[in-house]
Image 1 (cartoon, rainbow over the protein chains, first blue to last red):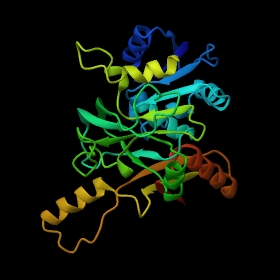
Image 2 (tube, rainbow over the protein chains, first blue to last red):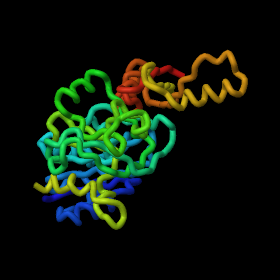
Image 3 (tube, rainbow over the protein chains, first blue to last red):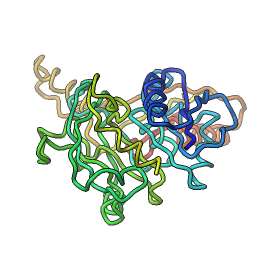
Length: 225
Length: 79
């Protein structure tokens, strides 16, 4: 399985995701944003960070960069795309994923381990998880408050496009278990074809028991199969 | 030719920053304050003399980059 990690000025989770991918036997390449050609890839990852210093809006400038046209082309021809944190924000700015990420409701940057529930496990990204499985996973963001219009929300429910929702350790969803105020506790979503996943939590930080846990491993193992 | 672009969050989108600014002003004694919405301001200078063409160009800039149409409204004014 060949993967490419796109690197923007201000990306800071690019090495983490590369380490996670290589640990799980992906053949990974880093791709600088000024490249106009993508190496042949089965998976493209847009990593977390603060691309372009979050100027204008998080992900807005990266969403118009040279390499993004190639990412859009690859996405439209079925390549798997994973956007984590700032990567999710960039994917919404390109229009590959609908909706947007607003500033956290409490106006604070939140860096902590939270719980999320696997809502749809019948996708290429999530098939190694059990349905409704609860994961303990790190979030680190200032704009993670997912918002979309009511038509799109209904469509996501009808087509099972919600990947993960914030919850507490036993799966309850309420104000206290939702860290950033996101609509319907949404932590990650798919596009209609389910070849694109955008998520605010960081699965690449959860691949080693020594520093955290292994709750992110099955996301990458799902992709390998 | 110069234009100002004002970008604000749409009415039904929560504006937590505006809310905090409003609460602070009320706490400072500004009792008649009804509401505050925080936004962004751009000053855009474009070449050429035809105002309608220039305005169209600025409108395109807004739609393509400056504004997130899902959550934001904008106004263009000549300055």
